[in-house]
Amino acid sequence: MRLKTLENKEIFKDISENTTYHLLIIGDALKVLKDENIFPDESVNLVVTSPPYGLRKKYGSKYCDKFNLEKWTIMIETVGKELFRILTPNGSLFLNVSPIPHPKTKEIIPLDSYAYFSLKKSGFYLRNKIIWHFHNMQNCTKRLSGRWEAILWFVKDIKNYVFNLDAIRVPYLTNDKRIKGKGRNPTDVWYFDRVNNMVKKKLRINHPCVFPEPMIERIIKMSSNPGDIVLDLFVGSGTTMRVARKLNRNSIGIEINPEYRELICRRLEPDNLMYGKCILKVINYDN
Ligand SMILES: C[S@@+](CC[C@H](N)C(=O)[O-])C[C@H]1O[C@@H](n2cnc3c(N)ncnc32)[C@H](O)[C@@H]1O
Image (cartoon, rainbow, N blue to C red; front, side, top):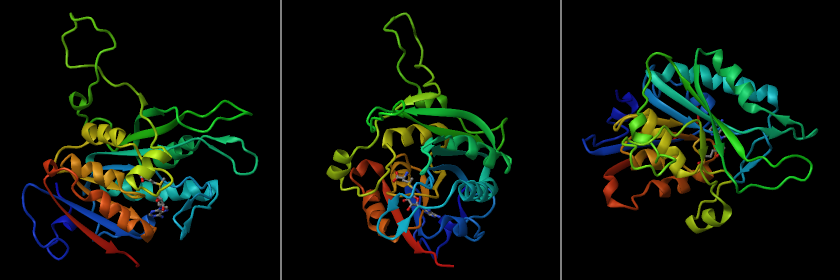
């Protein structure tokens, strides 16, 4: 299934095989997702995203993330309703959320629990709560140092969803040569290094929270097929679009801050001819 938007000749003049199409929309995801011309029902195969957490984090110089928990859950509910509408019947949603300290009391708020109840209201089923474990993070002195974030894997239909286990198998834990198999299931605890400031500087990625590419590769391989459409509605520096491109999927990214436009476009440029032809279109959405 292909998104009508991606077949729209006015947007993409040259539609051909062996090419992946990528649409970057600069605008507010809460408005853009409701636009049925861009997102008809059942038109996206996979959603991978990480929302702002309401931590007053500055994303570039224009946008500051400062809403409260109540508003945050309403935001997740609002996007959840639209994502349920636009996902294909066998589609999946991966939502990365972290436990966060309350800005005033410093109590830890389990945002993933709030997200679970918000998304259940749209009809989603939770398939796994994946623990993303990492080491490089600040050390705490008044509580245990946080070393994980959650990735909630939701499906629209608990009996019918894409799951390419063979594409993401990992080496067996033992060297026993008698074990003859394709590798083991990676389980629901994943270790991926966070993208630290040194790496970001080297790659010229000026964004506060960048997904590790190998982690997004695992998700895209596991829950979509080549030619599918992958959406990240809070695309930030464009990691999801970049990995979709590498894996021969089409992508749509939405980002509210126009300052990231250039970064996202640069990250979609070919750094290896192996990835095939890619056509990128950018729309400024100011409805
Ligand atoms: C947690 S970051 C995502 C980073 C991304 N995973 C990456 O690899 O770079 C969230 C992003 O959502 C953007 N954002 C916040 N509210 C938005 C909205 N309503 N619509 C679209 N983008 C939004 C922020 O500017 C920020 O870049």
